[in-house]
Figure 1: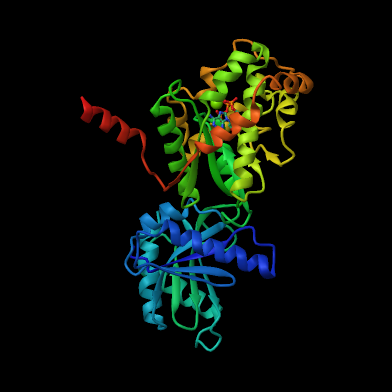
Figure 2 (figure 1 turned 180 degrees about the vertical axis):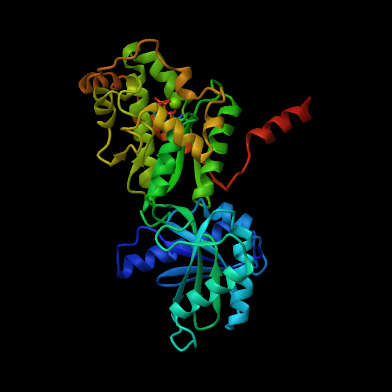
Length: 405
Ligand code: ATP
Ligand code: MG
């Protein structure tokens, strides 16, 4: 079917006035970003819906992108036709023949914003319905729960006909929820937490701790590539790499084994908070899930969270591992997350971390370290890279390695 336009219906848009404007403006910007490589496409954000005029761009490709844009409730590919009955009938028949399968029920649903048009909605519904019955076999009309609805919209400039109603991902356009930093590891949970933050409209920047030479280039590339998958939902995400080896070495040397993990996590959170402040963000997100491992008991979270009063938001806090895995599969991060490139936490993980660390003890042990100097040097080493949808980092690396041989 050669669709000419996509009609987009907005998601959670209960708000009015300025917020509504912001919602629609951000959504239009985000759609523009994901369709950037189709320069012929034109986007017209209106008060109640958005029209995407394809100008020859293939709907199948556009469809794949729109499925990942937060703030879209439903959308319909349409064909624009001149305002004559003959044109309406011709395209309606083509659309029905395309979609209809034997035994399906259908109805014609007409809407009219041009009230000067010579037929009203009831007349159009029955005329088009009759025409379809005359030209197709085994049609069955059904008013309450039809399998398919042929939608006809009579507007001022033309008539728009559609045979599909597709579901978007819902949520809020990225950017309407403010800015935050996201602590992204190479694991399963933090990519899912990232997706959920984006879904609420939060514009995230990734903070990733890496520890060369204890962790490989591959571990870093993996975290970047995960960001590339998530960038499908955001258009672009900044990736902030933070060198963490010196901190880990120092902690390992000076802190009792039972507190290695707690103190490492306290440093990570402090660094994430410094970066947050520097980048003008309002919150820190992470992928912790209550009770999943020793560092994620409530006692542990309490002892770690002690280093900041900034909101630390944990989107997967109450999800079961199986639920998180299901979601990771759906958003396309699971296969990459389970690739075994160890990140900085697994390398320095103590065999028996305390499940009930004490805040006072953690603070006291930290006095043995030059915390400010360590943090400052890590901050001096951060590197920010913008990452775009589906950008690859692991393959390139493999290719480079192969070239070197
Ligand atoms: P994940 O699946 O996200 O790795 P996890 O269940 O393996 O989580 P941990 O490895 O203990 O749990 O990490 C808990 C959270 O701490 C992560 O979800 C992430 O937000 C943050 N984190 C852990 N390691 C790093 C890292 N190297 N860089 C940035 N954040 C990290
Ligand atoms: Mg992990």
